[in-house]
Amino acid sequence: MAVAKFMPGDIRLGIIGRADNTGLGVETWEFCRHFPEAKVMIVEFESLYPGEIYKIYPERFNKPVIVTGIPTESQLEAFFEGIDVLFTIETPYYPKAFEIARRVGVKSILRVNYEWFRDYRPDFYISPILYHYNEIPGPKAFIPFPINREVLPFKLRKKANKFIHIAGNMKAAYDRNGTELFLKAIPYIKSNIEIVIKSQVPIESISNRYANVRVDVCDYENYWEIWEDADVLVLPRRYAGQSLPLNEAMSRGMAIIMTDLTPQNQFLPKELLIKPLRVDKLMINREIEIADIDPKEIAKKIDEIAGKDITKYSKISNHIAQAWSWENLKDQYVNLFNRI
View 1: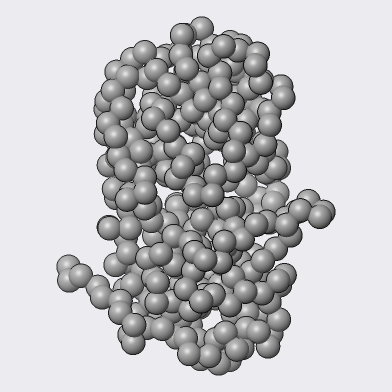
View 2 (view 1 turned 180 degrees about the horizontal axis):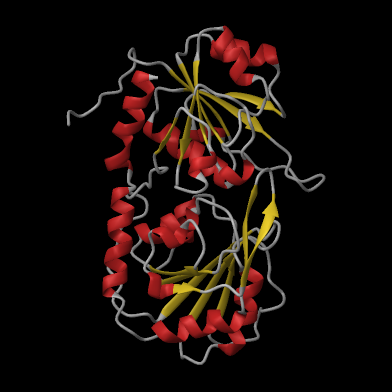
């Protein structure tokens, strides 16, 4: 297949996104790093917690337009001048943004996070993972969100000695990453292993209680800095579709222990998945699945792999990450921008 080209003067791309260290901010940053000629609108938001404002990093972008709060219709109309295609992740921020784009002759693409999916009606949907894909209206395509393997280089992991868990800011509802479950699992682990928990906030319930557990509390400016040379990611995730920590850990070559739940059970090695006690329904913007997991089963899965050869799992992670890399996927985005 011919290599697609995307140069200034072809399709003029516009991106509305975030400049903070949330997942949406990281994805916006990565997209603009790989499409540096794009016109960028950065939306500055307070967090969901009163009085807390996400720190933004506008220097990551090329002359961004910065708006505070939800963009107005006039701000969007001005932004749409001089672009052909609008790309947004999860939300257009203003509910009628795609209607305005159509009115001024701009095509629109929404990269879906299904659990937050609303009927915004762009011209095209992209799903980054096959999660409730049949419930997303068309026209649509499955294209993973690309992994930057230059900042997340592969290292072959051979033995499962050091285990890492990403707690983040611990503000996602219903313990999305399974951090509380992982903390409850630690006393049941029998193996002599090293455990690192990366958190943006202190975790008082675990600090200094176990000699083999280190809680690294830091809000890293660059997302790839959280990854040290651990061997296994433990992420007993309870719900949601795409997982950026999972993608990043695979790129670094880690074996992955996760919940036996869609979507990760569609591509991860079955023997490293944790069977949930039950799977219930959860309503966010859409009804999705949420897993209830026994902490003892998390500990059991860790003990099964602790000290063992994980070379094959490291290679599997590398294979998936390479398939989902910018090197392999950028042309798919380029081709879509050119044909929409």
